[in-house]
Length: 430
Image 1 (cartoon, rainbow, N blue to C red):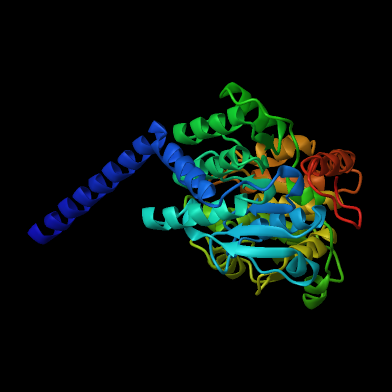
Image 2 (cartoon, helix red, strand yellow; image 1 turned 30 degrees about the horizontal axis):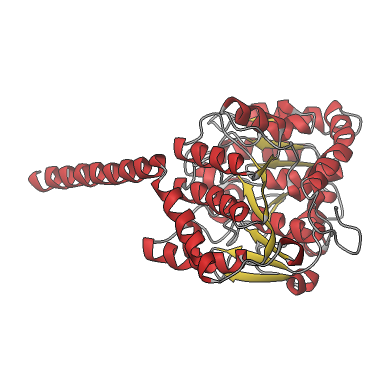
């Protein structure tokens, strides 16, 4: 009994110590000291390189990428950027395994791994800020792909540093933008302050939906313009996975998010949805969209297959974004806990029911004209999702009509995010 009490007391002390460290880090970030120190270090490194390259002689495009590393949505965003921007692109990644490129993407992308730029220890950060400064010395365009990483809810310091490197780019004479990101109703204070500073310095702020744009304005950050998620501008469709699965009849694509599963066990609710899809004559393909991370979708996908074994196939390998598009292109409907699976489905006018998380989905579904198909993750959601599926499935459903009307607008808004960047010779955005 005494040992149990000691363990409980130790756990409580450890939790309190962890909370204290987190509060201290947050206070440091809110103070602006991290931002000021990083800007000084980059400026000092740039000064050591001698005279700056004149803007008109610069040709480098620098893309500060999202985390990647098994996240198909992150891979899809970077590939969509490469689809629409001409010339060689330096992709700044946080790890060696963050991204894998093939074909023309491999020829175009020069990956530079700077793990300490956004993450890591103080020593890592000092080293990689200097390395990033070397890239800035001849960069003409710097783009931070903001995605869902700007408001501080995942990694507060990384959110701050993304705004800081965008600001540093402006100070170094480059054209700088933070492209295609969501903004929550309650951002972390340090993230808000750093983004305000970046905007004041001249960084273009390009949120990916009107809901995020309004939230930014409420926080005193004026967007340059509202765009759509860059993946709406992606090209390339590969039907290899569809052929591997032998999908010759009608089917649905379902994703179970490992991230949401950490907060709520929704397997029983998903099983309700899958059984109804089967009753409606659809085969069900369960597609893990994030693999090899702490929020891997595969374990919860297998749990769903065990719950409903008949007529359900789980995709066993990580698909390339073009393969995902080839899969959702032929689907009757998508039900997903991962936003970018919906983004890849909507351009084909495939209806998508999306479980909302982190306040990033509402704006997307409003743009698609189907705000009702955004569902709050909670135990008991199965019946609600079934009703949405049944309403959206018919060929002439209002959801399908709304999505079809929205697709050209979404593609145009996504292309607008590339305005001012070098165009691809084969017809990318200008």
